[in-house]
Length: 59
Length: 140
Image (cartoon, rainbow over all chains, first blue to last red):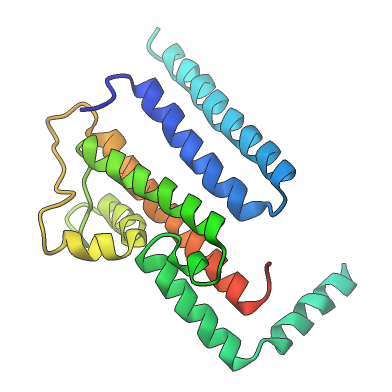
């Protein structure tokens, strides 16, 4: 068991997916970097938001 | 819009059978080993990045105790995992013969590991299709 933190595992997963998708979807470096950063932010932000949304059901 | 559709049709018509065969070969190479389809077309940076990312994701999946699912109908949900896992190409085939990706349900990270391996497989499908597009001339 490398990562005891699920958050860290999720962030790393999002980083890898964002890198691959940015290289697949964009040919230029600048737009690829922007696309990758947006994808990463959406995935991590979305997961945290969804996590808090699920937390509401435990109250 | 109509003009664009016409352009796309022309591209499809212009694609020769040799290009199609080359595209399929590159796609199969890309599926077998992540990034190999790009490396064979002299897209070295892209190929290296794809291989690095997919290999790292798969290695992390194994380190987390993830499982590669075979085709089984007892639990229908695992059929979806199977289709994701076959995207890992040669690694999937190897996992049928040697004990890799057997998974360890006792670990708290089992689900994460399985998701890492399945995610790597799904991304590799996209990478293989990208290699086909480059070989067919529909993408640079």
